[in-house]
Image 1 (cartoon, rainbow, N blue to C red):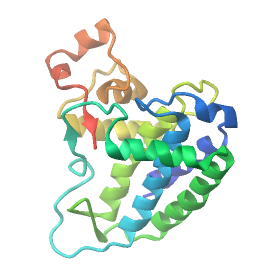
Image 2: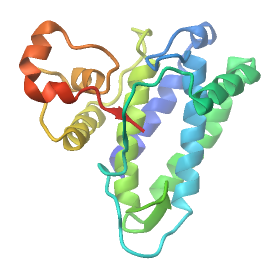
Image 3: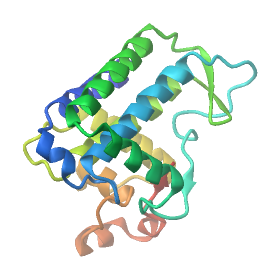
Image 4: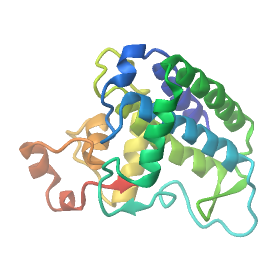
Length: 218
């Protein structure tokens, strides 16, 4: 719970520090500018708010790892929902409006997470999981998108180290194998999710398990 709050707040602060001109740069998400990514984060914040007030009955059907579906192909920005995000982001016009909307909705999502009962069962995407597992899954979501945000902004603050470490551990759980110890947490996340290709040396270290990569999470 606390790790989600720290990771999420760091992401909001990183977005707040992005200059207006940098909203037109490419992000680390294929096919999306920084402004498109920030618009997606508004949707993420809404998802957190909606899920935390959608209690579920019955048995838990997913945890932080099985919350994620692994897709068969990498995103190209042409998916209808991806295309909608691009149009929504462009409609804001002024980056300040988009920045303000994320701060408004994102801060509310952060407060809701702090107030939520970790053991409460919630429903999202036809899955039932505890609030604790849901927010742990969102540590990975937020950390990956924090890396996307700063992909071409070298002076922007990175995700918290503890968020990177937890996200790596969760990605390894999803993958079913551990990345080599020589991989930094950041590199494991970028290579593991296809945000950058492994170098020949990294590919050799990954060995046979590397054939399962990238993991396209959805």
